[in-house]
Image (cartoon, rainbow, N blue to C red):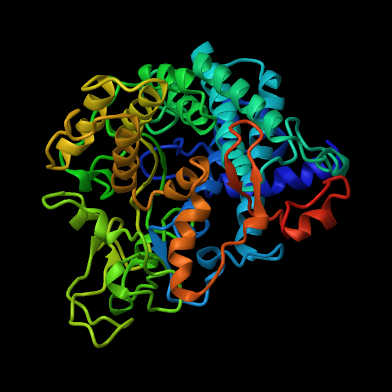
Length: 500
Protein backbone atom coordinates (compact mmCIF):
# COMPACT_ATOMS: atom_id res chain seq x y z
CA UNK A 1 0.00 0.00 0.00
CA UNK A 2 1.06 3.55 -0.60
CA UNK A 3 1.77 5.61 2.51
CA UNK A 4 -1.31 7.80 2.01
CA UNK A 5 -3.56 4.77 1.84
CA UNK A 6 -2.04 3.33 5.01
CA UNK A 7 -2.68 6.58 6.87
CA UNK A 8 -6.29 6.66 5.70
CA UNK A 9 -6.92 3.05 6.61
CA UNK A 10 -5.28 3.44 10.00
CA UNK A 11 -7.70 6.23 10.83
CA UNK A 12 -10.62 4.26 9.41
CA UNK A 13 -9.78 1.12 11.38
CA UNK A 14 -9.66 3.00 14.66
CA UNK A 15 -13.04 4.55 13.98
CA UNK A 16 -14.60 1.35 12.61
CA UNK A 17 -13.81 -0.50 15.82
CA UNK A 18 -15.65 2.19 17.81
CA UNK A 19 -18.59 2.67 15.51
CA UNK A 20 -20.97 -0.16 16.34
CA UNK A 21 -24.26 -0.08 18.20
CA UNK A 22 -25.82 -2.49 20.66
CA UNK A 23 -28.63 -3.66 18.43
CA UNK A 24 -27.43 -3.34 14.85
CA UNK A 25 -24.39 -2.70 12.69
CA UNK A 26 -22.25 -4.35 15.33
CA UNK A 27 -20.84 -7.70 14.24
CA UNK A 28 -20.08 -10.13 17.02
CA UNK A 29 -16.54 -9.51 18.32
CA UNK A 30 -14.06 -11.55 16.33
CA UNK A 31 -10.81 -10.25 17.75
CA UNK A 32 -8.57 -7.53 16.44
CA UNK A 33 -8.30 -7.44 12.66
CA UNK A 34 -4.80 -6.83 11.33
CA UNK A 35 -4.66 -3.72 9.19
CA UNK A 36 -3.33 -5.54 6.16
CA UNK A 37 -6.19 -8.04 6.39
CA UNK A 38 -9.05 -5.68 7.14
CA UNK A 39 -10.20 -5.37 3.54
CA UNK A 40 -9.37 -8.91 2.48
CA UNK A 41 -11.88 -10.85 4.60
CA UNK A 42 -15.64 -10.78 4.78
CA UNK A 43 -15.66 -9.87 8.48
CA UNK A 44 -13.18 -7.10 7.81
CA UNK A 45 -15.32 -5.77 4.98
CA UNK A 46 -18.38 -5.78 7.24
CA UNK A 47 -16.40 -3.68 9.70
CA UNK A 48 -15.39 -1.35 6.87
CA UNK A 49 -19.00 -0.95 5.75
CA UNK A 50 -20.00 -0.16 9.34
CA UNK A 51 -17.48 2.67 9.23
CA UNK A 52 -19.24 4.20 6.23
CA UNK A 53 -22.23 4.93 8.47
CA UNK A 54 -20.22 6.34 11.38
CA UNK A 55 -20.15 10.02 10.23
CA UNK A 56 -23.95 10.11 10.48
CA UNK A 57 -23.75 9.87 14.25
CA UNK A 58 -21.93 13.17 14.63
CA UNK A 59 -23.71 14.94 11.80
CA UNK A 60 -27.26 14.40 13.02
CA UNK A 61 -26.83 15.11 16.70
CA UNK A 62 -26.37 18.80 15.97
CA UNK A 63 -24.65 20.25 12.93
CA UNK A 64 -27.09 19.11 10.24
CA UNK A 65 -29.97 20.53 12.24
CA UNK A 66 -28.10 23.80 12.71
CA UNK A 67 -27.80 24.38 8.97
CA UNK A 68 -31.26 23.06 8.11
CA UNK A 69 -33.87 23.42 10.87
CA UNK A 70 -32.24 26.50 12.40
CA UNK A 71 -32.02 27.99 8.91
CA UNK A 72 -35.72 27.36 8.23
CA UNK A 73 -38.83 29.13 9.48
CA UNK A 74 -39.34 26.36 12.06
CA UNK A 75 -36.36 26.99 14.32
CA UNK A 76 -34.36 29.84 15.78
CA UNK A 77 -31.68 30.27 18.43
CA UNK A 78 -31.32 32.70 21.32
CA UNK A 79 -27.63 31.79 21.65
CA UNK A 80 -24.55 33.22 19.95
CA UNK A 81 -24.56 30.64 17.13
CA UNK A 82 -26.82 32.73 14.94
CA UNK A 83 -25.05 32.31 11.60
CA UNK A 84 -27.48 29.87 9.91
CA UNK A 85 -30.48 31.44 11.63
CA UNK A 86 -29.95 34.95 10.22
CA UNK A 87 -27.95 33.80 7.19
CA UNK A 88 -24.70 35.50 8.15
CA UNK A 89 -22.63 32.52 7.02
CA UNK A 90 -19.08 33.00 5.83
CA UNK A 91 -16.50 30.74 4.24
CA UNK A 92 -14.77 30.14 7.59
CA UNK A 93 -17.92 28.99 9.41
CA UNK A 94 -16.87 25.94 11.41
CA UNK A 95 -20.22 24.15 11.13
CA UNK A 96 -20.20 24.00 7.32
CA UNK A 97 -16.56 22.90 7.46
CA UNK A 98 -17.52 20.03 9.76
CA UNK A 99 -20.49 19.08 7.57
CA UNK A 100 -18.31 19.10 4.46
CA UNK A 101 -15.50 17.01 5.96
CA UNK A 102 -17.84 14.53 7.65
CA UNK A 103 -19.70 13.85 4.42
CA UNK A 104 -16.47 13.31 2.52
CA UNK A 105 -15.28 10.97 5.26
CA UNK A 106 -18.33 8.82 4.54
CA UNK A 107 -17.87 9.11 0.78
CA UNK A 108 -14.20 8.15 0.81
CA UNK A 109 -14.90 5.20 3.10
CA UNK A 110 -17.60 4.01 0.72
CA UNK A 111 -15.12 4.32 -2.15
CA UNK A 112 -12.57 2.25 -0.23
CA UNK A 113 -15.14 -0.48 0.33
CA UNK A 114 -16.14 -0.53 -3.34
CA UNK A 115 -12.52 -0.61 -4.50
CA UNK A 116 -11.68 -3.63 -2.36
CA UNK A 117 -14.77 -5.82 -2.61
CA UNK A 118 -13.28 -7.92 -5.39
CA UNK A 119 -10.16 -8.60 -3.34
CA UNK A 120 -11.96 -10.99 -1.03
CA UNK A 121 -11.50 -14.55 -2.22
CA UNK A 122 -14.75 -15.93 -0.83
CA UNK A 123 -17.98 -14.56 0.61
CA UNK A 124 -20.40 -16.54 2.74
CA UNK A 125 -23.06 -15.89 0.09
CA UNK A 126 -23.70 -13.82 -2.99
CA UNK A 127 -26.40 -12.04 -1.00
CA UNK A 128 -23.77 -10.87 1.46
CA UNK A 129 -21.48 -9.68 -1.32
CA UNK A 130 -24.33 -7.79 -2.96
CA UNK A 131 -25.51 -6.28 0.32
CA UNK A 132 -22.08 -4.88 1.13
CA UNK A 133 -21.75 -3.28 -2.29
CA UNK A 134 -25.32 -2.01 -2.19
CA UNK A 135 -24.84 -0.38 1.20
CA UNK A 136 -21.68 1.41 0.08
CA UNK A 137 -23.40 2.75 -3.05
CA UNK A 138 -26.52 3.71 -1.14
CA UNK A 139 -24.55 5.67 1.44
CA UNK A 140 -22.39 7.36 -1.19
CA UNK A 141 -25.59 8.51 -2.90
CA UNK A 142 -27.05 9.68 0.42
CA UNK A 143 -23.97 11.72 1.30
CA UNK A 144 -23.76 13.32 -2.15
CA UNK A 145 -27.49 14.11 -2.03
CA UNK A 146 -26.93 16.15 1.11
CA UNK A 147 -23.85 17.82 -0.32
CA UNK A 148 -25.38 18.90 -3.62
CA UNK A 149 -28.39 20.38 -1.84
CA UNK A 150 -26.22 22.36 0.57
CA UNK A 151 -23.26 23.41 -1.60
CA UNK A 152 -24.28 22.84 -5.22
CA UNK A 153 -21.68 21.20 -7.43
CA UNK A 154 -18.96 19.47 -5.40
CA UNK A 155 -15.92 17.32 -6.27
CA UNK A 156 -17.24 13.99 -7.46
CA UNK A 157 -14.76 11.56 -5.90
CA UNK A 158 -15.63 8.02 -6.91
CA UNK A 159 -12.38 6.10 -6.56
CA UNK A 160 -10.31 5.10 -3.57
CA UNK A 161 -7.95 7.87 -2.47
CA UNK A 162 -4.39 6.59 -2.48
CA UNK A 163 -2.58 9.90 -2.87
CA UNK A 164 -3.21 13.62 -2.39
CA UNK A 165 -3.70 14.02 -6.14
CA UNK A 166 -6.64 11.60 -6.04
CA UNK A 167 -8.55 13.99 -3.77
CA UNK A 168 -7.67 17.23 -5.57
CA UNK A 169 -10.53 17.30 -8.04
CA UNK A 170 -12.50 20.20 -9.47
CA UNK A 171 -16.12 20.77 -8.59
CA UNK A 172 -18.51 18.77 -10.73
CA UNK A 173 -21.69 20.42 -11.93
CA UNK A 174 -24.98 19.98 -10.09
CA UNK A 175 -26.23 17.93 -13.03
CA UNK A 176 -23.18 15.62 -12.88
CA UNK A 177 -23.57 15.03 -9.15
CA UNK A 178 -27.24 14.12 -9.57
CA UNK A 179 -26.43 11.78 -12.44
CA UNK A 180 -24.02 9.88 -10.18
CA UNK A 181 -26.51 9.83 -7.31
CA UNK A 182 -29.10 8.27 -9.60
CA UNK A 183 -26.61 5.68 -10.85
CA UNK A 184 -25.64 4.64 -7.33
CA UNK A 185 -29.27 4.42 -6.23
CA UNK A 186 -30.21 2.31 -9.23
CA UNK A 187 -27.42 -0.11 -8.39
CA UNK A 188 -28.39 -0.13 -4.70
CA UNK A 189 -32.01 -1.00 -5.51
CA UNK A 190 -30.79 -4.06 -7.41
CA UNK A 191 -28.15 -5.11 -4.88
CA UNK A 192 -29.84 -4.57 -1.53
CA UNK A 193 -32.17 -7.18 0.00
CA UNK A 194 -35.78 -6.44 0.96
CA UNK A 195 -34.96 -7.24 4.60
CA UNK A 196 -32.18 -8.55 6.82
CA UNK A 197 -32.41 -11.82 8.69
CA UNK A 198 -29.78 -11.17 11.35
CA UNK A 199 -26.22 -12.28 11.93
CA UNK A 200 -22.98 -10.44 11.28
CA UNK A 201 -23.45 -8.03 8.38
CA UNK A 202 -27.16 -8.77 8.15
CA UNK A 203 -28.50 -6.84 11.14
CA UNK A 204 -31.77 -4.93 11.01
CA UNK A 205 -31.27 -1.23 10.38
CA UNK A 206 -29.13 -1.45 7.29
CA UNK A 207 -30.71 0.08 4.15
CA UNK A 208 -32.91 -2.24 2.14
CA UNK A 209 -34.01 -2.12 -1.48
CA UNK A 210 -37.07 -0.21 -0.22
CA UNK A 211 -34.86 2.36 1.51
CA UNK A 212 -33.06 2.81 -1.80
CA UNK A 213 -36.37 3.30 -3.61
CA UNK A 214 -37.35 5.84 -0.96
CA UNK A 215 -34.12 7.74 -1.50
CA UNK A 216 -34.76 7.62 -5.23
CA UNK A 217 -38.19 9.14 -4.67
CA UNK A 218 -36.67 11.97 -2.62
CA UNK A 219 -34.07 12.72 -5.30
CA UNK A 220 -36.67 12.89 -8.08
CA UNK A 221 -38.94 15.02 -5.88
CA UNK A 222 -36.07 17.48 -5.32
CA UNK A 223 -35.63 17.77 -9.09
CA UNK A 224 -39.37 18.07 -9.79
CA UNK A 225 -39.31 14.87 -11.81
CA UNK A 226 -42.84 14.12 -10.73
CA UNK A 227 -43.54 10.90 -12.59
CA UNK A 228 -40.30 9.28 -11.45
CA UNK A 229 -40.85 10.44 -7.85
CA UNK A 230 -44.38 9.02 -7.80
CA UNK A 231 -43.24 5.67 -9.23
CA UNK A 232 -40.32 5.33 -6.82
CA UNK A 233 -42.58 6.12 -3.86
CA UNK A 234 -45.10 3.57 -5.12
CA UNK A 235 -42.44 0.86 -4.82
CA UNK A 236 -42.23 1.61 -1.09
CA UNK A 237 -45.89 2.13 -0.21
CA UNK A 238 -47.29 -0.96 1.45
CA UNK A 239 -43.84 -2.04 2.63
CA UNK A 240 -44.15 -0.11 5.88
CA UNK A 241 -46.84 1.50 7.99
CA UNK A 242 -47.62 4.57 10.04
CA UNK A 243 -47.13 4.13 13.77
CA UNK A 244 -50.35 4.69 15.68
CA UNK A 245 -48.50 6.65 18.35
CA UNK A 246 -46.52 9.45 16.66
CA UNK A 247 -44.06 9.63 19.59
CA UNK A 248 -42.94 6.06 18.96
CA UNK A 249 -41.12 7.25 15.85
CA UNK A 250 -38.61 9.03 18.08
CA UNK A 251 -38.59 7.52 21.59
CA UNK A 252 -36.57 4.38 20.94
CA UNK A 253 -39.53 2.00 21.19
CA UNK A 254 -39.97 1.21 17.47
CA UNK A 255 -36.48 1.52 16.05
CA UNK A 256 -35.86 -0.10 12.66
CA UNK A 257 -39.54 -0.95 12.53
CA UNK A 258 -42.30 -0.42 9.96
CA UNK A 259 -42.45 3.35 10.44
CA UNK A 260 -38.92 4.06 9.24
CA UNK A 261 -36.76 3.23 6.24
CA UNK A 262 -33.45 4.72 7.38
CA UNK A 263 -32.17 5.87 10.77
CA UNK A 264 -28.96 7.08 12.31
CA UNK A 265 -28.07 4.23 14.62
CA UNK A 266 -27.08 5.11 18.15
CA UNK A 267 -26.37 2.50 20.76
CA UNK A 268 -24.60 2.01 24.08
CA UNK A 269 -24.39 4.82 26.59
CA UNK A 270 -20.90 5.97 25.67
CA UNK A 271 -19.59 9.11 24.04
CA UNK A 272 -18.75 7.19 20.87
CA UNK A 273 -22.18 5.68 20.20
CA UNK A 274 -24.74 7.84 21.99
CA UNK A 275 -26.29 11.10 20.83
CA UNK A 276 -26.26 14.41 22.71
CA UNK A 277 -29.37 15.56 20.84
CA UNK A 278 -31.73 15.24 23.81
CA UNK A 279 -29.50 17.51 25.85
CA UNK A 280 -29.09 19.88 22.89
CA UNK A 281 -32.83 20.55 22.58
CA UNK A 282 -33.69 20.40 26.29
CA UNK A 283 -34.32 23.58 28.34
CA UNK A 284 -31.48 25.08 30.39
CA UNK A 285 -33.57 24.23 33.47
CA UNK A 286 -33.11 20.57 32.53
CA UNK A 287 -29.34 20.97 32.00
CA UNK A 288 -29.96 21.39 28.29
CA UNK A 289 -28.65 23.84 25.71
CA UNK A 290 -31.94 24.62 23.93
CA UNK A 291 -29.81 25.35 20.87
CA UNK A 292 -32.91 25.40 18.63
CA UNK A 293 -36.27 26.75 19.78
CA UNK A 294 -39.48 26.54 17.71
CA UNK A 295 -40.55 29.84 16.16
CA UNK A 296 -43.55 31.45 17.83
CA UNK A 297 -45.47 34.55 16.76
CA UNK A 298 -46.30 35.26 20.40
CA UNK A 299 -42.65 36.26 20.87
CA UNK A 300 -43.16 39.19 18.49
CA UNK A 301 -39.61 38.90 17.18
CA UNK A 302 -37.98 39.04 20.61
CA UNK A 303 -34.91 37.02 21.50
CA UNK A 304 -32.35 38.64 19.23
CA UNK A 305 -32.89 36.28 16.31
CA UNK A 306 -35.61 35.08 13.91
CA UNK A 307 -38.11 33.95 16.52
CA UNK A 308 -41.35 34.98 14.80
CA UNK A 309 -43.09 35.27 11.46
CA UNK A 310 -44.94 32.39 9.77
CA UNK A 311 -44.11 30.57 12.97
CA UNK A 312 -44.18 26.90 13.81
CA UNK A 313 -46.26 27.02 17.00
CA UNK A 314 -49.18 28.63 15.18
CA UNK A 315 -49.55 26.04 12.40
CA UNK A 316 -51.33 23.35 14.40
CA UNK A 317 -55.03 22.67 14.12
CA UNK A 318 -56.95 21.90 17.33
CA UNK A 319 -56.71 18.22 18.17
CA UNK A 320 -53.43 17.53 16.35
CA UNK A 321 -51.83 14.82 18.48
CA UNK A 322 -48.38 15.63 17.13
CA UNK A 323 -48.07 19.06 18.74
CA UNK A 324 -47.46 17.91 22.31
CA UNK A 325 -44.92 15.36 21.05
CA UNK A 326 -42.99 17.90 18.99
CA UNK A 327 -43.04 20.89 21.36
CA UNK A 328 -43.58 21.50 25.07
CA UNK A 329 -43.31 24.42 27.49
CA UNK A 330 -42.76 22.20 30.55
CA UNK A 331 -44.40 25.03 32.51
CA UNK A 332 -41.07 26.81 32.82
CA UNK A 333 -40.27 30.49 33.18
CA UNK A 334 -40.11 32.32 29.85
CA UNK A 335 -36.49 33.47 29.91
CA UNK A 336 -36.84 35.18 26.52
CA UNK A 337 -39.61 37.46 27.74
CA UNK A 338 -39.93 37.34 31.57
CA UNK A 339 -43.03 39.52 31.37
CA UNK A 340 -44.87 36.56 29.86
CA UNK A 341 -46.39 33.91 32.16
CA UNK A 342 -44.72 30.64 33.02
CA UNK A 343 -45.30 28.00 30.36
CA UNK A 344 -45.35 30.48 27.47
CA UNK A 345 -41.98 29.56 25.92
CA UNK A 346 -41.88 26.42 23.78
CA UNK A 347 -39.01 23.97 23.41
CA UNK A 348 -38.45 21.10 20.98
CA UNK A 349 -39.62 18.04 22.90
CA UNK A 350 -39.44 15.46 20.10
CA UNK A 351 -36.16 13.91 21.23
CA UNK A 352 -36.24 14.66 24.96
CA UNK A 353 -34.97 11.50 26.65
CA UNK A 354 -35.21 10.94 30.40
CA UNK A 355 -34.42 7.22 30.18
CA UNK A 356 -30.70 7.58 29.53
CA UNK A 357 -28.08 9.62 31.41
CA UNK A 358 -28.15 13.35 30.66
CA UNK A 359 -26.41 14.09 27.38
CA UNK A 360 -26.16 10.45 26.27
CA UNK A 361 -29.31 9.45 24.41
CA UNK A 362 -29.36 6.02 22.77
CA UNK A 363 -32.42 6.80 20.63
CA UNK A 364 -31.99 6.58 16.87
CA UNK A 365 -32.60 9.60 14.66
CA UNK A 366 -34.94 9.09 11.65
CA UNK A 367 -33.58 10.03 8.23
CA UNK A 368 -36.36 8.67 6.00
CA UNK A 369 -39.70 7.77 7.53
CA UNK A 370 -42.54 5.90 5.86
CA UNK A 371 -44.83 8.89 6.41
CA UNK A 372 -42.58 11.04 4.26
CA UNK A 373 -42.84 8.66 1.33
CA UNK A 374 -46.64 8.80 1.49
CA UNK A 375 -46.39 12.58 1.27
CA UNK A 376 -43.81 12.37 -1.53
CA UNK A 377 -46.23 10.45 -3.73
CA UNK A 378 -49.09 12.77 -2.77
CA UNK A 379 -47.07 15.81 -3.79
CA UNK A 380 -45.85 14.26 -7.03
CA UNK A 381 -49.34 13.15 -8.03
CA UNK A 382 -50.79 16.60 -7.40
CA UNK A 383 -48.04 18.27 -9.41
CA UNK A 384 -48.76 15.91 -12.29
CA UNK A 385 -52.41 16.93 -12.20
CA UNK A 386 -55.03 17.73 -9.59
CA UNK A 387 -57.65 15.00 -9.14
CA UNK A 388 -60.52 15.84 -6.75
CA UNK A 389 -60.60 13.30 -3.91
CA UNK A 390 -58.09 11.14 -5.79
CA UNK A 391 -55.19 9.06 -4.53
CA UNK A 392 -53.22 12.14 -3.51
CA UNK A 393 -56.01 13.04 -1.08
CA UNK A 394 -55.91 9.55 0.45
CA UNK A 395 -52.16 9.75 0.94
CA UNK A 396 -52.30 13.22 2.48
CA UNK A 397 -55.15 12.21 4.75
CA UNK A 398 -53.34 9.10 5.97
CA UNK A 399 -50.92 11.17 8.06
CA UNK A 400 -53.62 13.67 9.05
CA UNK A 401 -56.05 11.09 10.39
CA UNK A 402 -53.22 9.24 12.10
CA UNK A 403 -52.59 12.50 13.97
CA UNK A 404 -56.22 12.76 15.06
CA UNK A 405 -57.32 15.26 12.40
CA UNK A 406 -60.24 15.05 10.01
CA UNK A 407 -59.74 14.04 6.40
CA UNK A 408 -59.68 16.79 3.79
CA UNK A 409 -61.86 16.60 0.69
CA UNK A 410 -62.13 18.44 -2.60
CA UNK A 411 -64.59 20.75 -0.88
CA UNK A 412 -61.75 21.86 1.41
CA UNK A 413 -59.05 21.82 -1.29
CA UNK A 414 -60.84 22.67 -4.55
CA UNK A 415 -57.79 23.02 -6.81
CA UNK A 416 -54.14 22.16 -7.27
CA UNK A 417 -52.87 25.28 -5.50
CA UNK A 418 -55.01 24.60 -2.43
CA UNK A 419 -53.83 20.99 -2.28
CA UNK A 420 -50.23 22.12 -2.70
CA UNK A 421 -50.56 24.50 0.25
CA UNK A 422 -52.10 21.81 2.46
CA UNK A 423 -49.45 19.28 1.45
CA UNK A 424 -46.66 21.69 2.33
CA UNK A 425 -48.22 22.42 5.71
CA UNK A 426 -48.60 18.70 6.38
CA UNK A 427 -44.94 18.05 5.58
CA UNK A 428 -43.99 20.87 7.93
CA UNK A 429 -45.88 19.32 10.84
CA UNK A 430 -45.25 15.63 10.23
CA UNK A 431 -41.50 16.01 9.58
CA UNK A 432 -40.74 18.84 11.99
CA UNK A 433 -37.15 19.07 13.26
CA UNK A 434 -36.01 16.09 11.19
CA UNK A 435 -33.70 18.24 9.00
CA UNK A 436 -36.31 18.51 6.23
CA UNK A 437 -37.92 21.96 6.24
CA UNK A 438 -34.92 23.95 4.93
CA UNK A 439 -34.56 21.58 1.99
CA UNK A 440 -38.28 21.88 1.24
CA UNK A 441 -38.30 25.69 1.26
CA UNK A 442 -35.23 25.73 -0.97
CA UNK A 443 -36.51 23.23 -3.53
CA UNK A 444 -39.86 25.03 -3.70
CA UNK A 445 -38.00 28.24 -4.47
CA UNK A 446 -39.57 30.10 -1.53
CA UNK A 447 -36.76 30.11 1.01
CA UNK A 448 -35.95 33.81 0.60
CA UNK A 449 -39.51 35.07 0.82
CA UNK A 450 -40.25 32.82 3.80
CA UNK A 451 -37.18 33.82 5.81
CA UNK A 452 -37.54 37.48 4.86
CA UNK A 453 -40.88 37.54 6.67
CA UNK A 454 -38.99 36.66 9.84
CA UNK A 455 -36.08 38.99 9.09
CA UNK A 456 -38.49 41.92 8.85
CA UNK A 457 -38.85 41.84 12.64
CA UNK A 458 -35.13 42.69 12.98
CA UNK A 459 -34.77 44.96 9.97
CA UNK A 460 -32.53 42.47 8.16
CA UNK A 461 -32.44 41.53 4.49
CA UNK A 462 -32.03 38.02 3.13
CA UNK A 463 -28.72 37.68 1.20
CA UNK A 464 -30.26 37.12 -2.22
CA UNK A 465 -26.81 37.42 -3.85
CA UNK A 466 -26.17 33.91 -2.53
CA UNK A 467 -29.03 32.42 -4.53
CA UNK A 468 -28.65 30.71 -7.88
CA UNK A 469 -31.14 29.61 -10.48
CA UNK A 470 -31.21 25.84 -10.05
CA UNK A 471 -29.93 24.39 -13.34
CA UNK A 472 -32.50 21.57 -13.33
CA UNK A 473 -35.65 23.08 -11.83
CA UNK A 474 -35.00 26.76 -12.58
CA UNK A 475 -36.12 27.65 -9.04
CA UNK A 476 -34.36 30.24 -6.91
CA UNK A 477 -31.95 28.21 -4.77
CA UNK A 478 -29.74 29.21 -1.84
CA UNK A 479 -26.25 27.71 -1.46
CA UNK A 480 -23.95 27.58 1.54
CA UNK A 481 -20.30 28.57 0.99
CA UNK A 482 -17.61 26.05 0.19
CA UNK A 483 -15.42 26.09 3.34
CA UNK A 484 -12.39 28.31 2.73
CA UNK A 485 -9.95 25.65 3.92
CA UNK A 486 -11.00 23.45 1.00
CA UNK A 487 -9.51 25.97 -1.46
CA UNK A 488 -6.23 25.66 0.46
CA UNK A 489 -6.41 21.87 0.45
CA UNK A 490 -7.45 21.61 -3.20
CA UNK A 491 -5.98 24.01 -5.75
CA UNK A 492 -8.21 22.47 -8.44
CA UNK A 493 -11.47 23.09 -6.61
CA UNK A 494 -12.60 26.03 -8.74
CA UNK A 495 -14.81 28.99 -7.87
CA UNK A 496 -16.59 29.80 -4.64
CA UNK A 497 -20.38 29.92 -4.63
CA UNK A 498 -21.82 33.34 -5.53
CA UNK A 499 -22.21 36.01 -2.88
CA UNK A 500 -19.28 34.95 -0.69
